[in-house]
Image 1 (tube, one colour):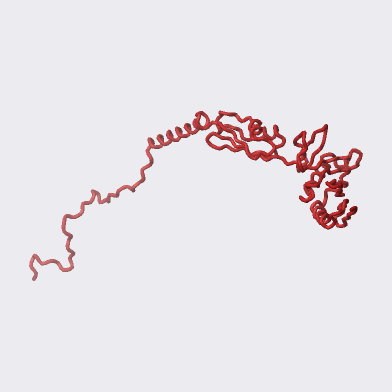
Image 2 (cartoon, rainbow, N blue to C red):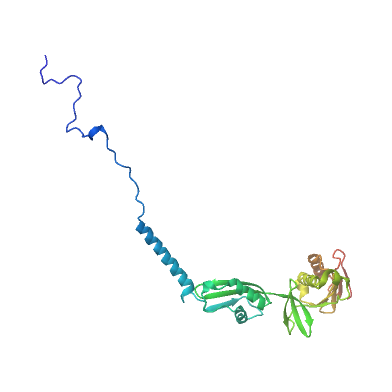
Length: 271
């Protein structure tokens, strides 16, 4: 018979130390879930104030300070005109805030005041400079009137009147006042047709052309140095005519008259 101190078979040993305490009523206590703290209201206000100050400072620097004002205007790309003429015609508002300069207005003003200009690009160059990059029109033909010469570009635009004819630019003589072509096509289209012929000329021929004579839309004649003439016809098939003419002038160097009005059936005569 076992003694009073013998342990009961199968009984579990209690863990050492005092038993865990439980809240009254037998309910377990749980910690609230961990939450991220939101930015404090004071931080938000500080950030907003700093942003407003930076924005105000930037606006003041661009428009109110003396740091970013227009002090220089440069023009590039001129040929006949001078940079000084372009800068003067631009009338840029000197000492105004560079950010406030209306570049489109400057561009329009230059094109209106200087018809020789074909295009203008206006750019700001911080902190103090305005750049004017221009492209001038190139004369393809000349019209003589009252002892002066009107330059006509490749688009048929009459853009300048000069007292001396530019070297290497043919003179256009239009005798179409009684031609039906004048009523059918109008002066503007006839002028563009003559310009097209001048543009299509081979470089070797163009340097010798003295006069482009237009009697009608389909009757254009070239007068070259050395008493040579070329019956070109209309302005159509210009590239093909130019190629045929270059070949004929090499093959018949002594010829004086060339007819390429029908490029598939050219003719030469004279010696």
